[in-house]
Image (cartoon, rainbow, N blue to C red; front, top):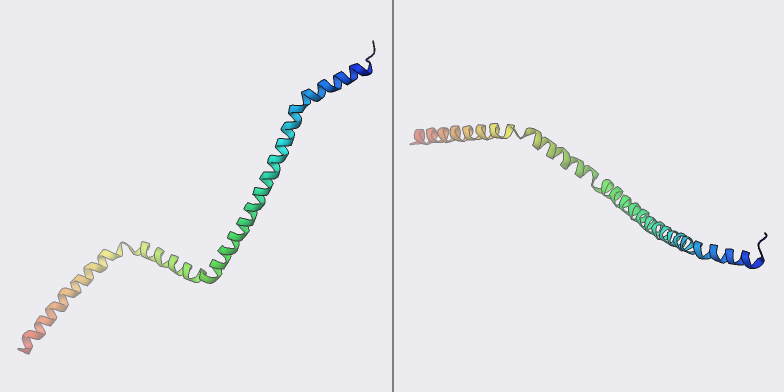
Length: 108
């Protein structure tokens, strides 16, 4: 039993109809991949622009940013010392007041 040209054409048409959804899916995947590539290219441009901005900021303000950072670290490290310093200032205020009162008393 051999297949006729008609049989082969029918088989070909059947295979084409069965493969049509696969072809559509492949076309959709290719389109989605192209869109993703376009978005990835846009993201790469954005990243390059951001890197340029960061580099410019580092060059123009790097020293100031470093100094501010170091100052904040110093403040946080010295935070426990602040109450001690305030107590000393209050003590000095009291001493200065007492000295001023003594000077005024002698001046009279």
